[in-house]
Amino acid sequence: MASVSLQQVRKSYDGKTDVLAGIDLDIADGEFVVLVGPSGCGKSTLLRMLCGLESVSGGDIQIGGRVVNHLPPAERGIAMVFQSYALYPHMTVYKNMAFGLRVAGEGKAAIAGRIQKAAEILKIGHLLERLPRELSGGQRQRVAIGRAIVREPKLFLFDEPLSNLDAALRVQTRLEIAKLQRQLKATIVYVTHDQVEAMTLGDKIVVMHEGHIQQAGSPLQLYQQPLNRFVASFIGSPTMNFFEGRVSEAGANGVRVLLATGEKIHVLVSGAGISVGDAVTVGLRAEHALSGIQGSERFHGTVSVVEHLGESNYVYLTMSDGKDVVIRADANMPIQLGQALNFSADSRAFYLFDSSGRAAPRLEPGNMIVAEHPG
Image 1 (cartoon, rainbow, N blue to C red):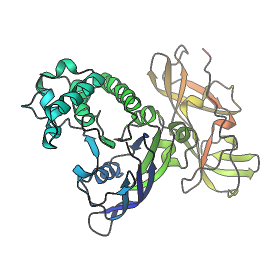
Image 2: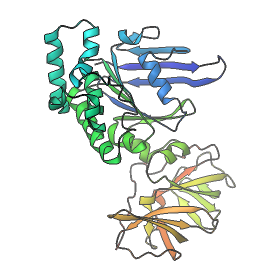
Image 3: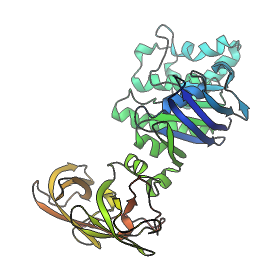
Image 4: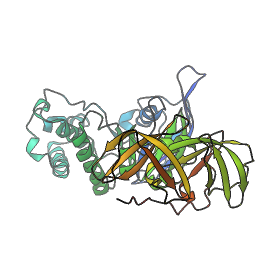
């Protein structure tokens, strides 16, 4: 396998507007890195540049310590798995997996050995003589992955490989990809717009927006310590709740904020660089809200929607300013549409973002509150 290094990588189609603007990223040998972000953020373009399907407008791409900017895909030591399976419909599974090796001049014995090994890993040995039309969506995706494995590449690139699968197959195939990465000890760069895939698969998540990297780090780091409001809103399901307000006090022990809803709350973040009167946004995740008034900071709203998940409910409340807030409540808690409901949160559970979207440093970043919901 191989490490990857991107140094001030840019992409522009008209010479003026950068689709990717100065991307710096290091990927260690054997690391599983997920590029995630909304449509149009540049993640697929970056992947296509890695594999050589897009040219580099500026900067360097290194794979295994070698600059590959001008190398064709065949000379980069990579294998790519696309959203579409891209299988030859007239060829059997075996012939689809063997095609690239035959073009490369590999002998029959070597080809057979590699295909057998890949088939065992992916549990598709019984499918080798079938045509693609005789396979399910999940089986076709495994064949596409197997075609990449037999090439024994330095780097695997996955471009939204689960998008065409139904919900159950997405979960199953996601688990198979995670097991495969551990088994092969492969270096993988994986593109998705699904933050659940990102959180469950990646050793490192790279959140992108408008051609820039917003934050890179472990799943837990991005979830608990987002650097800005965009990352906080993108990572986590349901998305983080946001309350607009103005600073009424700021000091070494935290910041007090008067919210637009009228509540005055204490947020345990550093007050450095924050002044009284500043417009700020306070963030709170659904699972950190406590139904009732157990927490130190209290709110109230009217129930507008209830999502029943079995083990818990997501309750959507309309606040006094007309905005909706979602909290997680115990599945056995009696809730009716239109009822008034109180909820609260511990001061340590809140995030604070300034007018530019930058997150204020938390005073207790390692001590997140996970609410326990009484029945």
